Image (cartoon, rainbow, N blue to C red; front, side, top):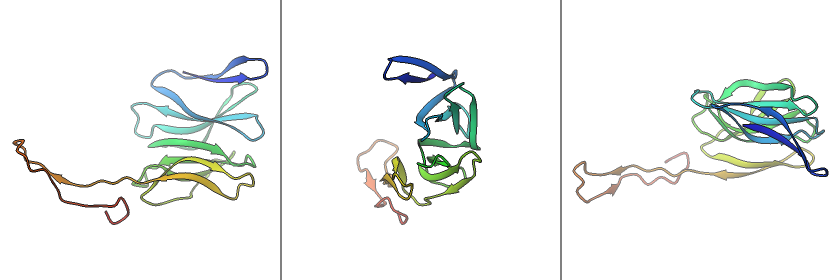
Length: 166
């Protein structure tokens, strides 16, 4: 799999980085200064499969950012000042996927932004870096009783709303 940069004016593309299975790229994001491209690298078959890396546009040099790995990561964006990134990720210290985290750049210190039962997707940062817009989603799960013999009579026994109390 290739991470490709396409020059829209000239129509020329250049491979910035390449990985081979079981590694893949997800959610590339240009740095505000345009000198680096951040991406989520996912390693199939590994418990802490997702990590955030950047690649220098000039020479393709890879630079890991922050911790070694997340259980999963689904979204990535730079802060407008270029001194950090936001990632929507499932950390092993939490029981819920898709929490928002801030990674400092270049240091990679990790700090939590959200800590709830929801998950967050498709985030965007305001021009001044003071606010985040994101899609917040909730899962609703319930328990049902079904006869192992296949007899009719499926019965729902919990009625959760997807919030903390369900």
